[in-house]
Amino acid sequence: MSKMRHIFGSLLCGVVGAYALTPYGLWPLMFVSLSGFYFFYAQALTPSRAVLTGFMYGLGYFTAGLWWIGNALLIEGNDFWWVWPLAVIGLPVLLSSFTAIFTGMAYVISNPRHISGLMCLTGALGMSEWVRGHIFTGFPWNLFGYIWADTLAVAQISAWIGSYGLTLFTLLWGCTAGFMYVSVHTRRHQYLILTGVMLTFLIPVTAGAWRLYQHPTQYDDAYQVHIVQPNIGQDMKWDSARAVAHFEKHLRLSASSSQSPATRLIIWPETAIPSVFLIDPNARRLIRDMLSAHTSPAYLISGILDRRQNQSTGKTLYYNGVAVFDTQGQMTPVYSKTHLVPFGEFIPFQEWIPLKPVVAFSGFEKGSGSTSVAMTGIPVFSPLVCYEIIFPAEAATRNPLPPRWIVNVTNDAWYGKSAGPPQHFAHSIFRSIENGVPVIRSANTGISGMTDPLGRVLAKTKLDTEDNLILPLPQPLSALPLYMYIKDAGFLILAILFLLFGGCIRAVQNSMKKKT
Image (cartoon, rainbow, N blue to C red; front, top):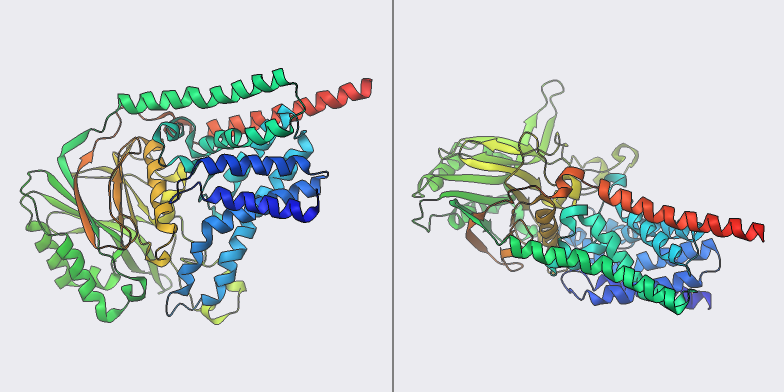
């Protein structure tokens, strides 16, 4: 096979795979994508060609799946417009390097035409996904397992081994047809291998379907959730001339519209309340009046832009946080965002980049870590700001108590009408399943909504619309999912076993060759 055909074939397979994800949801394409990739991988005659195959596949997959990230840099007035090529091309290149390295590692360890090769590549690519989700602050967006966002029986696997574990098996299932085509095994052995792979699909999916049947959505009628989506464009959000109008829009969308005796939990999106309004007595009075107008006790959980003064240096520090306003309008800051966005909320190695927009960028301070919030009148919840929802093991904590729900405040106006907001919302489905709690999501604009503890989408808004949703709060599962106890340990053990299987088979084969 010519080198150019090999390169473009791998690239095309990656592009096809991206359309298996939200918002397209064409999950069978992932089987076509991964099997095609495995075919080209098996044709590699050297480790360097295998590395190139992995790189081109990743480049196609990440470019097609993440092209929308560049939209954030094209907002009018953005001083970082010049970074657009780095976001659109540089990020996929960086992410593809992980795919390339682990593909080359699998090739060295095992024979692609042997069952050990299938197991080894699956384990290696699974580890690649885990590494890119953790190294350099991590970016676990569009994991392969997320093709099952609309197929909840399969998605339930993440309750036991998390989204990385689900990704591991998705890679196994997807690569199998390509492996069967290039396999050197006898027909009988091929049937046995295919049967084994099918069982790894049918058994957990059957268990997942039973889990859904056994746990219908249950509601806690003592609480009503009121989700606000004001739909404020990014080009207008920080316009000081419109600040009062934006604030009034949040208040209007939060007005009382129910005579229910249930406690009302009103959710405002990320940075809904800027720092100047946090200290403005008139703004605080309007919040108090809005809350007291409800016929039942009402609380506001809102994203805030918190400004604090460092007493020792006198420097002004900014935090992207969450605060709770009680029935009397008294504010308690409960959380500051911990996982900040590189180049969006902070600039890595800022002191080494002597460019004016970079030097002048003040950014946000990092919070003290994920937490669960316990306050009188409100069920214990875990707050997450924006893309913190994409990190599986960090989504909820049992400190000081296991949360009964997750609150995700965000602003997806940066990404316009693209695949970004639906993909961001899809993460809520998997965080619900992994943690066994509902996720309540309020977006400035994008997609707001609610998922139950098994990932069922109970309600969601449309993209770029002004809306509010009022629903009873779903109850969490009575027993925590296995994933909440073991986190990513289950996945890591499986991935290492897959790799060891491939390595042991190769060692045995080499030993037998020497004896003969």
